[in-house]
Length: 127
Image 1 (cartoon, rainbow, N blue to C red):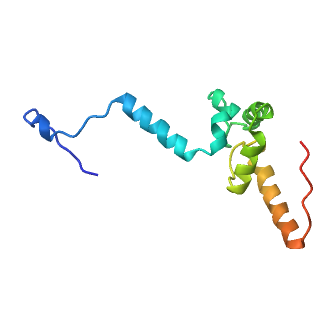
Image 2 (cartoon, rainbow, N blue to C red):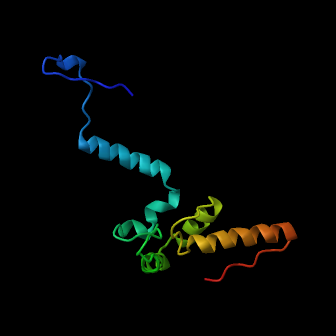
Image 3 (cartoon, rainbow, N blue to C red):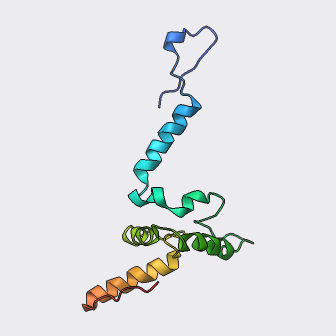
Protein backbone atom coordinates (compact mmCIF):
# COMPACT_ATOMS: atom_id res chain seq x y z
CA UNK A 1 0.00 0.00 0.00
CA UNK A 2 1.49 3.29 -1.09
CA UNK A 3 1.69 6.08 1.43
CA UNK A 4 1.08 9.52 0.01
CA UNK A 5 2.41 12.61 1.69
CA UNK A 6 0.41 15.68 0.79
CA UNK A 7 1.64 19.17 1.43
CA UNK A 8 -0.03 22.51 0.67
CA UNK A 9 2.00 22.83 -2.54
CA UNK A 10 1.21 19.28 -3.88
CA UNK A 11 -0.36 19.58 -7.34
CA UNK A 12 -3.99 18.40 -7.40
CA UNK A 13 -3.28 16.08 -10.35
CA UNK A 14 -0.84 14.02 -8.25
CA UNK A 15 -3.08 13.65 -5.18
CA UNK A 16 -4.61 10.22 -4.51
CA UNK A 17 -8.28 9.90 -5.41
CA UNK A 18 -10.74 10.63 -2.63
CA UNK A 19 -13.54 8.14 -2.16
CA UNK A 20 -16.82 9.38 -0.81
CA UNK A 21 -18.53 7.77 2.15
CA UNK A 22 -21.40 6.76 -0.13
CA UNK A 23 -18.95 4.96 -2.45
CA UNK A 24 -17.36 3.17 0.50
CA UNK A 25 -20.77 2.06 1.80
CA UNK A 26 -21.85 0.89 -1.67
CA UNK A 27 -18.66 -1.15 -2.11
CA UNK A 28 -18.99 -2.60 1.39
CA UNK A 29 -22.56 -3.69 0.57
CA UNK A 30 -21.35 -5.34 -2.65
CA UNK A 31 -18.62 -7.21 -0.78
CA UNK A 32 -21.06 -8.30 1.90
CA UNK A 33 -23.45 -9.64 -0.76
CA UNK A 34 -20.57 -11.65 -2.24
CA UNK A 35 -19.63 -13.10 1.15
CA UNK A 36 -23.08 -13.96 2.48
CA UNK A 37 -24.79 -17.21 1.53
CA UNK A 38 -27.67 -16.90 -0.98
CA UNK A 39 -30.44 -17.33 1.60
CA UNK A 40 -29.11 -14.55 3.85
CA UNK A 41 -31.08 -11.76 2.19
CA UNK A 42 -34.29 -13.39 3.50
CA UNK A 43 -32.97 -14.03 7.02
CA UNK A 44 -34.94 -12.61 9.94
CA UNK A 45 -31.73 -11.78 11.82
CA UNK A 46 -31.00 -8.95 9.38
CA UNK A 47 -33.97 -7.11 10.86
CA UNK A 48 -32.50 -7.32 14.37
CA UNK A 49 -29.07 -5.66 14.42
CA UNK A 50 -29.52 -4.97 18.13
CA UNK A 51 -29.24 -8.69 18.96
CA UNK A 52 -26.05 -10.68 19.48
CA UNK A 53 -26.08 -13.77 17.26
CA UNK A 54 -22.40 -14.40 18.09
CA UNK A 55 -22.19 -13.80 21.84
CA UNK A 56 -18.88 -14.50 23.53
CA UNK A 57 -18.36 -15.72 27.04
CA UNK A 58 -16.66 -12.87 28.88
CA UNK A 59 -15.94 -12.25 32.53
CA UNK A 60 -19.12 -11.13 34.21
CA UNK A 61 -21.27 -11.57 31.09
CA UNK A 62 -23.66 -14.50 30.66
CA UNK A 63 -24.22 -15.19 26.93
CA UNK A 64 -27.35 -17.29 27.52
CA UNK A 65 -29.91 -14.44 27.52
CA UNK A 66 -28.41 -13.14 24.27
CA UNK A 67 -28.53 -16.62 22.73
CA UNK A 68 -32.15 -17.10 23.80
CA UNK A 69 -33.14 -13.81 22.15
CA UNK A 70 -31.30 -14.77 18.96
CA UNK A 71 -32.92 -18.21 18.92
CA UNK A 72 -36.36 -16.61 19.33
CA UNK A 73 -35.77 -14.62 16.13
CA UNK A 74 -34.61 -17.79 14.35
CA UNK A 75 -37.76 -19.62 15.42
CA UNK A 76 -39.86 -17.49 13.08
CA UNK A 77 -37.32 -17.24 10.24
CA UNK A 78 -38.28 -18.41 6.75
CA UNK A 79 -34.75 -19.63 5.95
CA UNK A 80 -34.01 -21.28 9.28
CA UNK A 81 -33.28 -24.75 7.91
CA UNK A 82 -31.05 -23.39 5.11
CA UNK A 83 -29.15 -21.29 7.65
CA UNK A 84 -28.70 -24.20 10.03
CA UNK A 85 -27.52 -26.55 7.26
CA UNK A 86 -25.10 -23.92 5.96
CA UNK A 87 -23.50 -23.62 9.40
CA UNK A 88 -23.18 -27.40 9.67
CA UNK A 89 -21.77 -27.78 6.14
CA UNK A 90 -19.28 -24.94 6.66
CA UNK A 91 -18.28 -26.23 10.13
CA UNK A 92 -19.09 -22.88 11.74
CA UNK A 93 -18.38 -23.37 15.42
CA UNK A 94 -19.55 -20.03 16.81
CA UNK A 95 -22.80 -18.15 17.12
CA UNK A 96 -26.45 -18.97 16.61
CA UNK A 97 -27.30 -20.22 13.11
CA UNK A 98 -30.73 -21.55 12.24
CA UNK A 99 -31.74 -21.53 15.88
CA UNK A 100 -28.91 -23.80 17.01
CA UNK A 101 -25.88 -22.99 19.12
CA UNK A 102 -22.37 -24.05 18.16
CA UNK A 103 -22.51 -26.82 20.77
CA UNK A 104 -25.55 -28.37 19.07
CA UNK A 105 -24.00 -28.12 15.60
CA UNK A 106 -20.69 -29.65 16.69
CA UNK A 107 -22.58 -32.56 18.26
CA UNK A 108 -24.66 -32.93 15.09
CA UNK A 109 -21.54 -33.12 12.90
CA UNK A 110 -19.90 -35.58 15.28
CA UNK A 111 -23.00 -37.78 15.30
CA UNK A 112 -23.31 -37.60 11.50
CA UNK A 113 -19.67 -38.67 11.12
CA UNK A 114 -20.25 -41.58 13.49
CA UNK A 115 -23.41 -42.66 11.61
CA UNK A 116 -21.52 -42.50 8.32
CA UNK A 117 -18.66 -44.62 9.68
CA UNK A 118 -21.13 -47.16 11.06
CA UNK A 119 -23.31 -47.15 7.94
CA UNK A 120 -26.38 -46.01 9.87
CA UNK A 121 -29.04 -43.95 8.10
CA UNK A 122 -29.74 -40.61 9.70
CA UNK A 123 -33.18 -40.04 11.11
CA UNK A 124 -34.87 -36.82 10.01
CA UNK A 125 -34.44 -34.15 12.66
CA UNK A 126 -37.66 -33.17 14.42
CA UNK A 127 -38.27 -29.48 14.87
